[in-house]
Image (cartoon, one colour):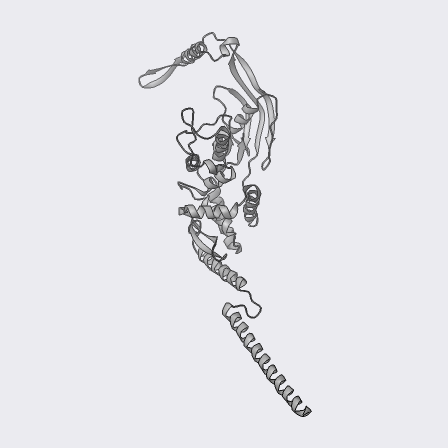
Length: 383
């Protein structure tokens, strides 16, 4: 009897063992098939594999761009896009000379999610790209030696802005410069100097100094001490009626040897804009008039050295630098960048306005004036 019971227990234990082994084998087969289907086997990860595929795709697109001639590579770049459905990203080729609005927004959002936090980091990334191929950015040193500035000012009540004084000033100006046309040629017969109450005023007297490159220089002084006159003299924007003596040089070159307004921008207290244009149109117009400066030549040399060294730049930085170095664009990416950095996006499509038209505020006009100077890639900015 005991032997029969033991035999039954042995049979039941053997059958249960076979069932457990069978279920284990089926479970392992199912897990193995799922792993093979999703590519997770052999210690891999589906997300790592998809990212590797996307990176390989970007490498192939960049290799195709690298084989193009230099001036064609200036107009081609790639951008990384994130797919909202899957969270993955892919690379698209961009035609820099014809960027769509969505492409500009994608680039700016990728570079400047938070302007206060990301702008300095973005500028450092541009500088690191330039430094790793040992390109030296041209720097400007401004020297002024024994600078004298004098002007004539009215005395007493003649300095008041009244109708009588304005009329007298106009008559004086016309009578002091009488020009007759004789035989088609201009002959200055003379000038009639009326008795006026003007006196000579010394605005700057024997001023010398140096403005070092890559420095932030603060000019301090009491009111009416000549701070504005000094900045205007360094920028080459002094009034022609003033008498100037002394020497102002940019890297050893006199102001008469080049156009200082293309190197230095002076932002005055008065904002002069076309009230009928919007903020975006004003920035685009200033960018087309002033051009891209030295950005194009810098980018050509940068691409040449990177190709020789076999270096691959950051796609976002490459696309931005190429988009801001293409001349003749009606709407440049640098305009969107300036709008975002200066906080003018909210009024980008608002009229600037004037005395007869309602427009943006005074603070926004001052930021717009600063943006026009930044849009032209000046090397010196004074305000």
